[in-house]
Image 1 (cartoon, helix red, strand yellow):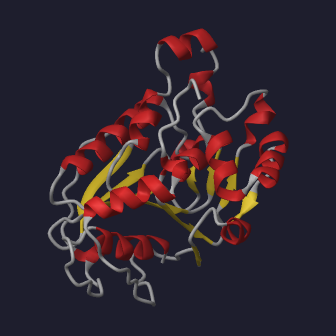
Image 2 (spheres, rainbow, N blue to C red):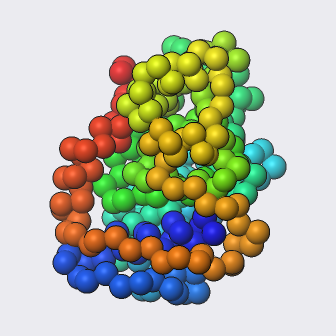
Length: 259
């Protein structure tokens, strides 16, 4: 259900300027054009391939965000961003985990100096500069870097069992991918600081009540199960969408390591 909801909204954001919006009912039935990646699955879905779908695909590692995955995610989103036939993107993971955090084994030997000099978060900055709408469809864990990636997206939909959090404090560190800034902007200073300094997780229901996410859906029993209600949204020129995004969603502004 969650993926169907995100996929139904995405085509409405990809419509041509001032084109009347119609109900979308065939998004999941069109033939996908798959990209060849190791850690993600990249597909074009919808009528005419108007929606770019990216699925994080390190299931055994709960979609831990290794450098290879982040590089592929950056490339896939940039490809869709430059494709005139794609108007919006959906980013999702598995039912168990959207992304459970960074790849700790990969990060363990790194020092602050090496991270800074090698622009360790360069892929994160690039993702935040995507100009087309990106919808996160979150099931299961969205922790640490996973929560930060979701917050880079413009709209977040969540399954009822989704969990959000910034548990970096348990590893003796702090969120490094914009979590300290975006979480505070999304839900307010007090609750965000509590989560950051305690590592406490947030349920999908609480995330909805605080405005971190847009909607909560029942966890889908099948990825092909049709979503019962139709998604409608007023269409608008893409230039106005981008202007509104910059002005009304400051959490999507680029936050470099220096910030």
